[in-house]
Image (cartoon, rainbow, N blue to C red):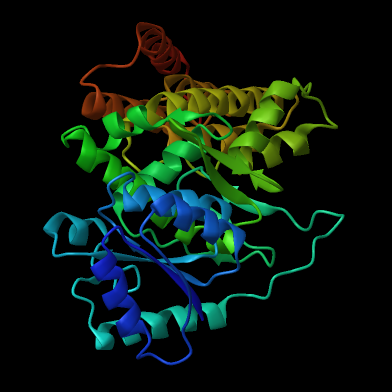
Length: 386
């Protein structure tokens, strides 16, 4: 296992070297008091592990690790720190990612053993291919899901809720530079700047480690003042839905199936399972598009004799968005057309109940008037003889 050590204190470097030499199968390739010399060496050589002090005079150790991992995502970084309650909280007590000063041989053995297990389980590096392989599927409707090539859902285990939110925020603004200052204002507004930046670098570090299995498809690049998330050979459900709605595909007999498939892309609202205020506007926009397309399809079925399909589509709209008054109204009119009086009354009562419960309001005057007029018409009709 090839390692280097980076610490601005020469005594700490020598002591860590002394402890590591007690551990077998370790090749110490270099010791660096200058973090930038250590960075240049790490990027130029084939290494397995960098032992990196957090508190460096010229650059935060977590930021330096984040820079290394941008170019070498497979590199293992072990942070070395004196007792620091904040640092331990930042790493969520992950034994693989940090060791405490003074470094004990027993602790090093545990850490290196875990790194060896990680190296052993890492898939063999593939030769470059001229043709792209199967795309990775990422879903953002309802909840984040990553689907592997064999159509299995790959579990994504985030170290912290902040790391999860940061990744989803970068995914929403994929392909765009997101400034570090904006991320700190979003996620750590209560922290003083030094601590906030350390939290940001730590979260990005953990995201990169979490994304290692998908490295050929998803990666984060960093600039001086921000980050950008890149997708390569990825099928993103939100983008597929956007392409369909922007295509202006006319609705006719030959494209009905295309509309059905497109609507099924949206298995729920955008990031529905996450209560992030910054996702609300995008969620509302995509919801409005879905309602527009679903209503258009239901109206087409109704006008072309497909009453059963129209009823199912309108019912689906009502089940998904109970406050969609126009869908309730369309169902009432279709039930009336089919002389199913009981369902007309039931649908109106359902609309009344949901509006009263959610908004404390009655149905719109137009719908209320239609219902009253229809009810009066039914009362005035002669009863059929038995």
